[in-house]
Image 1 (tube, rainbow, N blue to C red):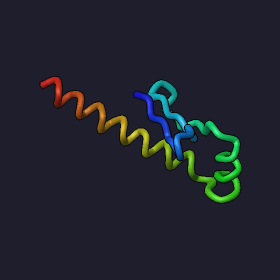
Image 2: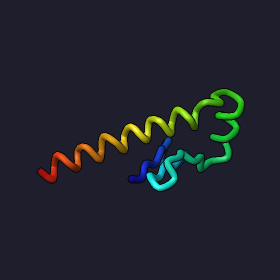
Image 3: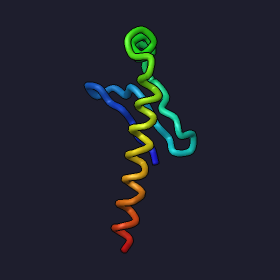
Image 4: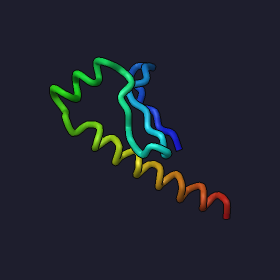
Length: 64
């Protein structure tokens, strides 16, 4: 499972089910998270992990 965060057509973060972590892809996002939202990556990772579980469940339903 791979998730990508986009703002105005620019990738800002990335999540991969192999690493189970969200990774920032823009330098300006690092400044925003460090200065204004230090818990962003932890929260974003949790959101992606939830989306991954939902996706997995939906695929299971479709297979039936």
